[in-house]
Image (cartoon, rainbow, N blue to C red; front, side, top):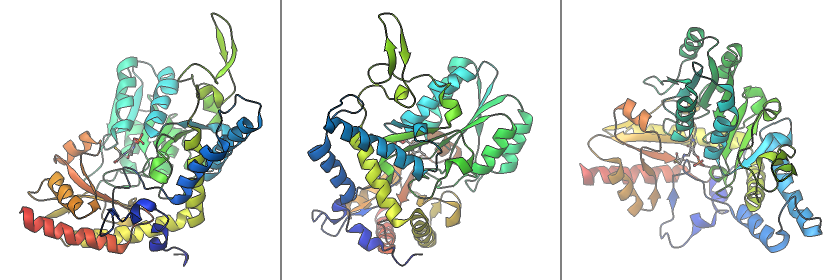
Length: 413
Ligand code: C6P
């Protein structure tokens, strides 16, 4: 790892992690839900409101042009960050949930008919399952769900077999890049290749991948890629849908109104250029500005260093958690196969009790079903505890977690 990477130094940039209110320091391990924000991002948003605030794409006065430039610069920065060919392929949304709904209801619903197949994953977040259930219900298409094996992985053999079985019928494959519970990083590139051979398009939920690793949408070979800014240091309420340019022309607008039109007559209207056509109304300008600052921050560290740090931390966490009697880790045992999160259960102790006790010690973990009810059903568990790491977490954070887990176990068993 680059000598420059120092999680303790990074931590200093995050005001909430240094808030004296948390006497012994906040151990924030709920990064898969949302990340904390560095001062640089907070400053960028504050600076925007203090010096550049105006509506975008509407005024010809200097301030409005400046705000428009900042908004569009952010789009270009996002495009470069994910190696998209064209900035127009970036549509700002409020987050991955909206992005996936747009794919489902602005593109897929027009291209599937009764009898077609939609392939989704049982282990996925509800945001990448329910929209597909809805499209199937409304079109008469059939939803085919892929299941993970006992290790929390999915074999390419299984997928290939499905494609062979259902050749010509599968129109869309909706997968996640990384699971928010199992941590599994799925073989997106290989799945895209198989899907292409079968004539299907691929939509990827990148919520748990993009904050943690370098993503190149072109080399993955997918057609749609969705992510949220708030899990990668940016403000809430800003997200991205990347879509291959050829498909954008076939997409219908999601919302109608100001900012997305060509010409409006009393009874008919035409639509403006891409991507404005897909961003009706005043957009989340400060969110885009914050996202741009977040990308600068992450690139300053280097995504390869982010990934290496998380592998190191996850390896350590897997080892230490594995030593706790009665604790079962969900998902792959190898850190390289995961993003930086570990979910687990402890025999005879409810996950909410564990999370509540850890909270009293200043440790924030998530407990529950993490918006993946079908996965929990399949694993035969009612809930789980999840510790998820990011750039500011350290081995000391993991040590505190382990220590307090052992204490909680003594108290609760
Ligand atoms: N998962 C978690 O604690 P939004 O809420 O739109 O930003 O992201 C939805 C979403 C979609 N896909 C995956 C894989 C996700 O992990 C999430 C958000 C959070 O796991 C909140 S439920």
